[in-house]
Amino acid sequence: MMHDLGRLLTQKTLTFAGANEIAEDMSLELASLRNSGEISNDAFLEAGVIQGGISIIANMLATGANNEEIKLHYQQIKDRAALIVTTHPELAVVLS
Image (spheres, helix red, strand yellow):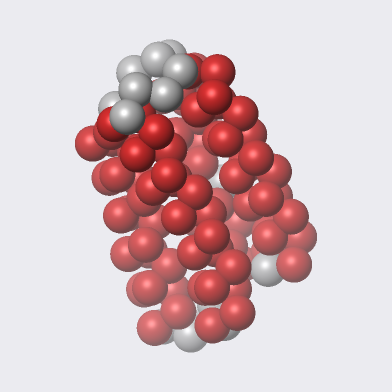
């Protein structure tokens, strides 16, 4: 999901609706993994920070933030996602 977000951002085709859709898809996937027991509640909560960061990107797009500012925020959440995956490798599928 992060890969899709980055690709759309690089192509300058990321929209508010697109970022919201990625955030919602991530939220649903995380809830499903938690409910099935594939991830712990701790992993779910940590990954939720990334989902929230994507929602912030959607809001930045809606308010007309410049592309460089959005790219900076994206890089920060991408780096954070990589750190989370080192602690919770089962999240790699969702956070990559």
